[in-house]
Image (cartoon, rainbow, N blue to C red; front, side, top):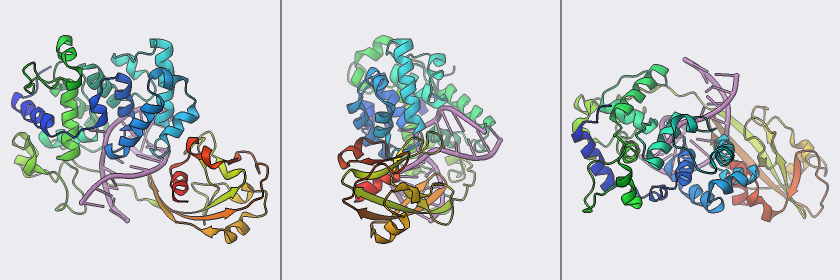
Length: 386
DNA sequence: AATTCGGGGTC
DNA sequence: GACCCAGAATT
């Protein structure tokens, strides 16, 4: 393991310790809290995670609390964040950590990688950030930063490309600090020496986070359409003097990007039926998209692609087409998921008539219970706008 | 190797 | 609107 070029390390670490964002999960070394943040941050921007992380930890502050929680509560705490498999994997992994490790998250590669939801990135992140182990990681930020620093022309997404990026990352990650050094000041996260000066020999967790922070705030992706208005802020980059792409004037060309898949337009009609017993809600099937989550009765217009169910069966009070025409129009919503762009028309229908649940997978949910229900993101937005 | 899985911040 | 994001699991 060669150590990173000293000047590069110094420049990046100094910048990071001075200019990094003050993110809540950087103020803790509780492995569970770090683990939770890393899972929430998978394919999700920092800004979106901020509120969720604190709320989740407040409700389920320990591995044991998470392990003994219901899956419904866990998914409800995740509602709106997306990629709900992450929540289910996290829950399953917490149960195994309690059963197999007495509630203490292991720090070894094999142990972590065997847990659901732990891919290569999360293993490296938890090991380096939570435990201070010398473990590399590659996420979208690191891939972009390393591609530019070393002018790597890699085929985007290819397995061989990923192997190169991981090899480079592993060649750069510093050795673990001594246990004494790490324990000296837990809050400072390897950041300062005993004189209060910023340490120049920071550990792997700091190094990895510095790489990601640079990618998130300075070494930004280039937008294919408008290369002039976006892209890396090389003028303020702390390591531009080490950057091969910068030296070659190619920062806007690297990394190579593959063209995105076109998105599909979807039109939905959504009916909010409010009775004395509560809102009529549908529970989605146990498998597939948004599995087991709850939503307002939904009908897809002109096709049955995402929401194949007729919502005519959703109510015992006559045809839904009739309710649709009687309902009062609500705020329409634009909702983008993966490669679909959804236009949702919403109508609200109130009635004093309470009735039995009209069919399986439907139920009336009182307003005060809606918040504890694992709602789909779209239904949560509709609820918030009522 | 290619798909699937949500949703939103940000320009 | 268009990206693309502190990816993992499945096909």
